[in-house]
Image (tube, rainbow, N blue to C red; front, side, top):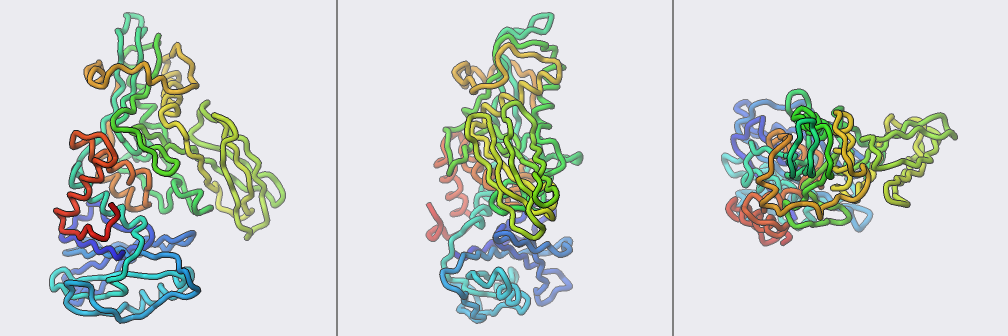
Length: 454
């Protein structure tokens, strides 16, 4: 389908809705009488990226057009420049020479395009191509989910992740019970937050490292910042030893898995292990490091360095619990570190282990083993957990920072967290409840829901 999203008087600090597949912004300024100042945003399709040009500042009005591309079933793609107007538009329009050049170049020529740019003041269609055709929405649909979440949660919403304790603490610092981390749906848990309190956003995120080899970069922040801060606060509260266990409470919503990815209220490093590969001379073994470092996983690597200019071929899997196996090859001229990732299969067990390790670094020992499944059977009823004393708490940046992250890098896990988060905000508990909230938002916003997936 063709997606058209318009926003007026948009502040520079507000999240902007762009598709990772393709996205263009038409900004109308007082000096731009004909409304033809086109700003390119980051364009992504497969392994190719076009960097954004310099930003325009303080636009008066903004019209955003998300133009989807789909793989062509034939060797060529249609590039007709004149098209009927979309329903409700005032006139037909063509596509600028700049856009035509982009569409006809590699690798875009093997795709189909649909877009419409409308002057918000006059209603005139400035550019249009296949505006009434239907396209698979792809990641463009994230703009709807993010818009609904901003409407439901509010741009200033913050996630609070508490550590609560069951049992009392003795004078010598012994907790005669369990320490419980209550998942709040915080997407980054401090792992991307910079010194300014903003979420660090790379040009190409590690969440897509395996899909497009060689493109991903890592943020500078320690992915365990939030976990370490919680552990520091526990030690500062006077606890020195936990006689019971450390438990992750992931009962904020009804469990759901999309594809092979669990959508859980507790997220550490996007529930990924980053594998950092540094090539050597051709024919020699590359060096493999990983983060975050934790006893939860060992890494078995065998990655060969191939001649410069060859294609990378890296695969990660797990032959046994707690063991990551990485095999393949990277070219000698690959930018180091070359990033691959491993999907953590049990986010709660992973979070429990890294929390116990962080506690140990801050002088807090735990009687229970560091490794193992999350002992969820030890959790009290949800309502009782809410009344337990708080030993530590971590608060996220405002939600608008996460909205930017999700839209900028097309963050799948972040987008999939939004429906259950909206459901919980409205006193519900299922993914389906959140999707209902999103559909209701789209109706209020005047967006035609008929062609959208249900």
